Length: 286
Ligand SMILES: C[S@@+](CC[C@H](N)C(=O)[O-])C[C@H]1O[C@@H](n2cnc3c(N)ncnc32)[C@H](O)[C@@H]1O
Image 1 (cartoon, rainbow, N blue to C red):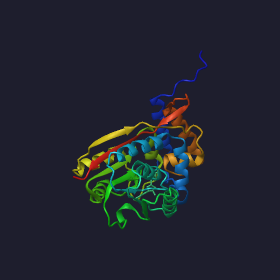
Image 2: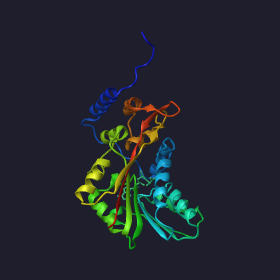
Image 3: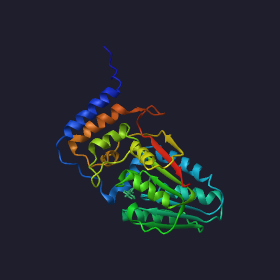
Image 4: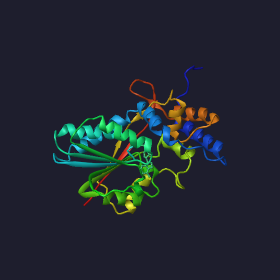
């Protein structure tokens, strides 16, 4: 008889997910994440993933193709700006002295304040920054942009198709819309089971976004997938809650950790990692 533990399988994960579904059936919705700790818990989650670095590199590469002139970016759902600050810095460094306009939309004022502070810390005179504390649908914008960017924020809008059309209207002719969103993969299957509904809808994943582009008659230039991994084996309770987008009750934590273990693959260091891909949807304003 072997002492080696059996390798977790997709079948095991499916059974564990069904068990979680059964635990939740008929139960009241779990509490959602609180605005005041959202950005902090998100930052702690990203520390365990290589996705943020892959996104920054990918988007900086796209921005580098946009010429040497003045450039403007609208980041929708900018959060604390920890990604945007890297992109703004790359724009400033790429062409010294050229004007860079960077605007954020963020409904949670604490996160919006951090966005402003992080951008100010760059100390770049050629960088003009504003943030609107608002949802995308009610942000008071009276300017257009070269790039409109949604990084992990379109999950939360009420209507994806309407949002995409609204975003295109904010672009200059030839401007680029980039929407980064996760598929309903191993990790987000948990979100589907555990996260409370948002204003009457579930979170939108990549298939929903692609459908909205198609149904809305918006020509997609391409969809690129960045294959990231996140190490959640020893994640804190708050990080685990962020991963499933809900405040877990004590009896759910064990089953959630068992599921995450079952869907993990070995990382480069041999330690378990959960697949954490992100899809990049790109379209231009014709
Ligand atoms: C996962 S965070 C991503 C933050 C940032 N883009 C990043 O990648 O670090 C999602 C952000 O979307 C914001 N958000 C939620 N609903 C929104 C809406 N209707 N319009 C704009 N932003 C929204 C949240 O407040 C949150 O800061």
